[in-house]
Length: 554
Image (tube, rainbow, N blue to C red; front, side, top):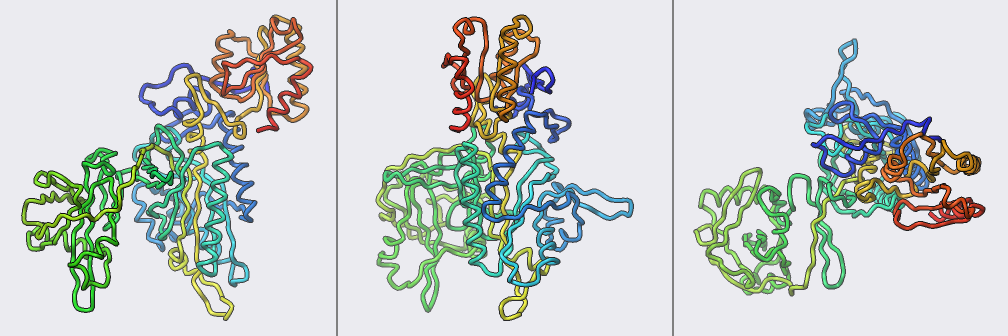
């Protein structure tokens, strides 16, 4: 391709309200153009990157025998009403009406439709397991689109749905797709973590998110390193800093400093229930934020010997406890770890069901306060909190949608059984934002070679003024093109500063610069975009093999 015949529209300045690196660079490099809030036109370079990302995803999904399919963008509201998600999604669901006043949904996801499809097509366990996937546009009426394509109203996803005759089959496929996702993101040279996560509105009881590290990401990760160099990673959701262990208490990021939950000056409280054959009893245990509760030590306490079982309260029990605490009619014996000091000024702010409770340990909320060593031996911990972008999410949904849609198949005994289901998504468009967030410098994008819009850029200095330079540039261009190298020839009649500025901005990995100074010695200059300060002078006879080896190497 020649730049003079190509839609290469770069920008030097962008609107002031655009604050994420990926959004800025996508506009400046001419990957996208905004048409409306949350809506973007994809220009040729952006489209080329999208196509390469899709190719990587397809290869890995096909490798695990997933079958590509294409569902319609429009879905009837009837299936969504069966699953109750028509109402759960609320205003994010975009609805349209046909001439017969039937209601349709611009699809945000396809669990119901995929389940209904399998119900109509598969009747026996012999046809299972099966995994279907598609790469399709999705729509959500975001109240505040942000980060460019990170959170938009229209976006592209790879979504997959697996169907199984038993739970073990679901778990096996889940593991295969988990590993496939790891391969996909590694091929794109993404730094990412996989973390256990909430299933949210999709449903199920077991899921993992894949989070790409990004300075401007809207999610957060706590990464803990112990002295044994083991890593523990916890996902911080978009609205909350951390999820505590005992009754899923959530502490809002806006009210608590983001590092405080792991800090020695912050505390964690665990409410526990002790059971035996006669009665049950509640105790509270308080430790420092950077310590770990030792269950074995608790069980060895003298006052606990008559209790056979220690468990966490149910959500209903926990809500009941909080209501009684609020009314001052319920007292919990509490044991405080010896490492906590200054008890008289210690106040815990708790949030249950959107209501805040301040618990001061010098009032009558707790009685029989004891101080004891109840933590595991402290080990040195180093933790970081990193922003990230969710690029993938996988779920073991189980029978949820199968029950809604009444999807049953005949088992080996010819008895109809409800089918197990898994769901697996990758945010294709937001992957581009994640890649740019990790691969850029002050001058522009630095594309990993597997997703770059072109493999090679040829820059002839004075292309329109020097016949020799033009002849050599054309010869090299046609040779690379003939051998199916994705090459872009810079043949615009622009100032040299504009040409090099655009070259750095669009981020093509390999660059050949042809000028009179090097041609005097029958050489050309080679630059690698990720290290543009390093210049390599290559004999013009060897430049083709040199570039081929560079491309094959990566």
